[in-house]
Length: 145
Image (tube, rainbow, N blue to C red; front, side, top):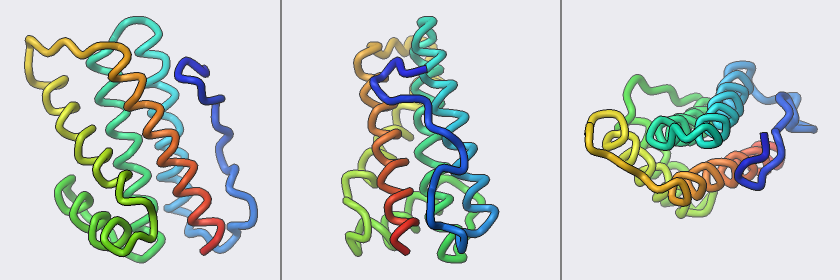
């Protein structure tokens, strides 16, 4: 689906990255899956759930980047912190991606646990677009590494 203006992203589409760890590729594939699900959910009006999927797409991207450095974590906070330390603070990738990751986490918490949550579809479409932009930046980074 291309609901948010991004085409469906083919899996294993990081040319020139034969040195990429297998688990890194699996995490990127998972990110694609959940972003496609976010698009589909948004299309059928499941806005709050789509917000959660957008977050999980970003989290999988951050995990993939950290995995490629040999860093693995079991909880969200550790992933957020390590991503900030290794990619945002160093400006290896634009720090906006770290901010988007943290903001999307906050939205996911509200969407999942606040029974009165009512996100606007435009806001969630922006989250999904941000996740796709993060995915493309990660792929470019991994290709260059």
